[in-house]
Length: 224
Image (cartoon, rainbow, N blue to C red; front, side, top):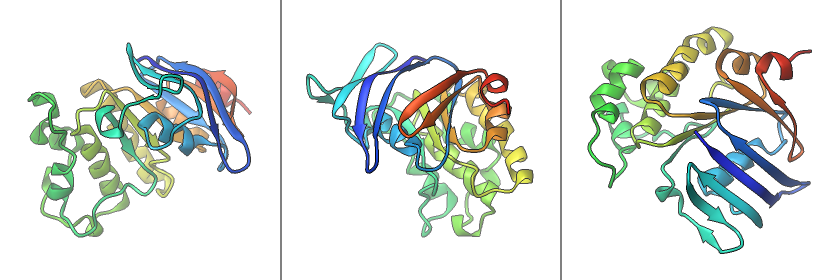
């Protein structure tokens, strides 16, 4: 993956998010306290927030450029986004939630077929269940699967395990690694829990009040 955020400026309520960074690892972690600007960073990558300055590029494609007023709509960026609340539809069963994730206009690809994704993420037996009857870990796997089914070139995860206990987190981590290895989708993973980053990420970038303050391998950045 090559995700480039060049001279980005996004004013927030109490500070301005200012970043200039290239992500080039399979799983990059963004670490920082609540209110540091982590979710806003994901929002601008996804196209849900518009910076006042800077450029966003994925691979060799520019998807946002303030100077030329280029701003590719979220639906055309081919970026999967799993927010903190998962955004599952409570009135639909699992199958209906998953089908909603299919991306129109993407060529037929067995790798991202419903059957294959359900097999890899171990959710086929849940298809007819309403999502409100699922456990927290099952809901997470459904949310991940729906994002995968859009055949994204990048997946953004905003504190996806914040509501889970340690046991469930440990059970979910292998599924996130499957996303990286089976589907070859790079991930940007946001959290304020150091243990998740140590288990998952190739590199960690620390964000504090809209500024990157450290970057490196998890043992180096997260050392007490």
